[in-house]
Structure formats: structure tokens, C-alpha cells
Length: 119
Image 1 (cartoon, rainbow, N blue to C red):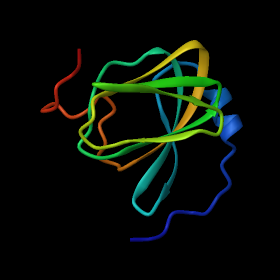
Image 2 (cartoon, rainbow, N blue to C red; image 1 turned 180 degrees about the horizontal axis):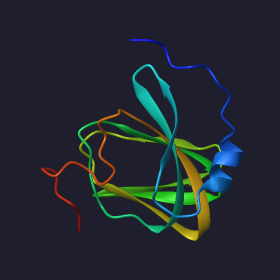
Image 3 (spheres, rainbow, N blue to C red; image 1 turned 90 degrees about the horizontal axis):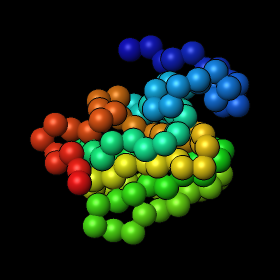
């Protein structure tokens, strides 16, 4: 296996290019994890993953609502990890926000089918 080509990624330029919410784009691969960028706007469906999911708010603000736990509000520069198996859904009510996600390549955007899909 050859190493991926080293390159600079402009997160700002990538964010400007995203026009539809909840359609993440892959920015980089590091240590078998993918760094993704997504536009958050409105509410994403409840779901859970078999692996942890890291959210880093790049701009704007959004909430990660958690099943049975208080929601977590994120603003630019804030980071939160949803533990594996925890049902959650991101919500961006105050306009678009952009978030970086660190995920395994096998992470399914809408969660794993054997997990409950939410309230």
C-alpha cells in the first residue's frame, strides 16, 4: 500500500463548495481514519454507530442531541466525541454550521441498521 499524496487542504474553501446540508465530503485520510467536512442545517435523523464519532465545530454552532442525556452545544472550535452505541442527532437551528468529523471508513452516515433509529 502506498502512502497518500501529502497536500494542503483549505477547510474554508471546502466549506464554501458545499451547497447541500448533510452531504459530507472527505478531506483527508490519516491513520486509517477519514476527516470529513459537512454542512449542518436543520435536523439530521437519530442514529447510532458501532464506533465513536468525533465532531469539531469549524464555524457556526450546532447541538448534538443525545438519547437519554443532555444535548451538547458546540460553537466554532468546540470538539465532542459521541461514544459508540449512543443514539444522537446533530441539529443546526440558527443557520448553516460546518463541522469536521473524524470517522473510520466503514462508518455509515445514517448509523448501523441493528441500532435503534431513534425517538
